[in-house]
Length: 198
Ligand code: IMP
Image (cartoon, rainbow, N blue to C red; front, top):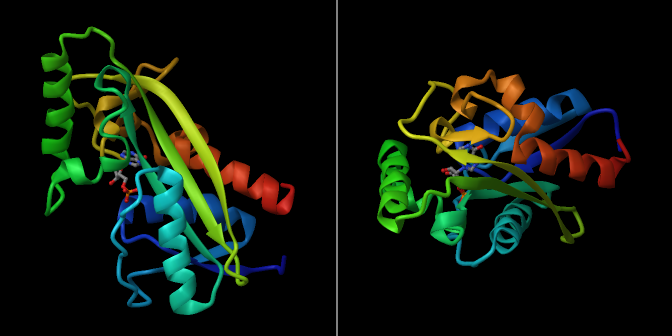
């Protein structure tokens, strides 16, 4: 790899973009956002994180011919059979309202009658090379759903997710602390180790 590489980041989600930029900058990889390049967001028609990540990375590569990185991620709650899962963004409606989405998770848990609050975040990143070949890397972080929401940082469902072994939610942590243990941090670490051996 050259000293400084530039990849297209196939995402319009400002929370994800910020986290991915911070994870890759120290490795000498700069990201160009899809929105800044005028790329549309493809519809996520697949039923798996891998499928949707591949679809987004391939669309950005097809439009630019550049190495493209995408992230498909979500919250999976055990007592809800893994929901919202790949539908995590859609549970927030249009326009996105994550206060409503977090309440929906809480209400679904109450309705389930289960006391089990175990959950995990999943992140699958897909890297589409200049030759159009796609490789995936997955990261997960275990934790539990708390109520009421706590903290002002992060994005999405961070305020109701407390990682295992910690007494603060992701939204109560600094960005660096979240990155050090998050599903996104782990997926990126797997990608960097496999692609660059570091
Ligand atoms: P998608 O990958 O674009 O389908 O969206 C994934 C959705 O999952 C995001 O919009 C968030 O709602 C949620 N999500 C993914 N990663 C995180 C995270 O690190 N914190 C909180 N919510 C997340």
